[in-house]
Amino acid sequence: YIIGSRLVSPSSACVSVLSLCLLPQPVSLSPPGVVSMAGRVYAVGGFNSSLRERTVDIYDGARDQWSAAASMQERRSTLGAAVLGELLYAVGGFNGSIGLSTVEVYSPKTNEWSVVASMNTRRSSVGVGVVDGKLYAVGGYDGPRLDCVSRLARTYNAVYFIHLSGS
Image (cartoon, rainbow, N blue to C red; front, side, top):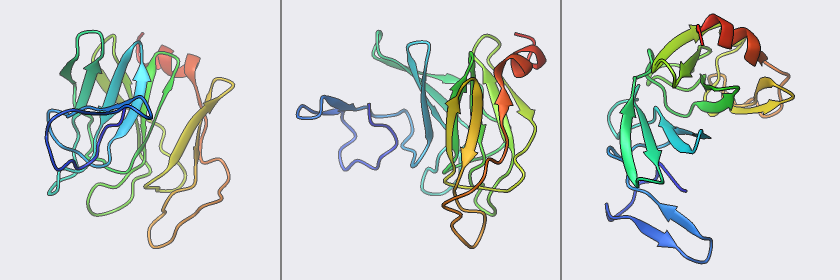
């Protein structure tokens, strides 16, 4: 799936050579954080041409339908998003004024967002990934410069945050 582009036509279009589908979101956002979790695609935050968003849209491919989840606590575009355990993490990003160091975690079981420990450095366009049960944040913009090669900002342990979120 490709999500979060600015299409000339609002209709869905498939690219057969790549076997990809462009899915129109309820609101056109660019660029949201996108993850796949429990058979659904989550589009988190983004920019709607005037504001950074807190919204979360969920696409259920089996039903070919979008629905809304609880909004994040902070507006974010160019954020990193990843799944660790059964939780979705929204990492850093840009709120329209400054890069963010904050991290939020979403539990689909409770449909709630919680703020967890921030990164050591604010980062927009941050890369995030999970290795050996830990979430890593790497690179991104820290303000006026691009920090392409960086050390680990913070790791998150799935068991610890599942316990904190009450899941």
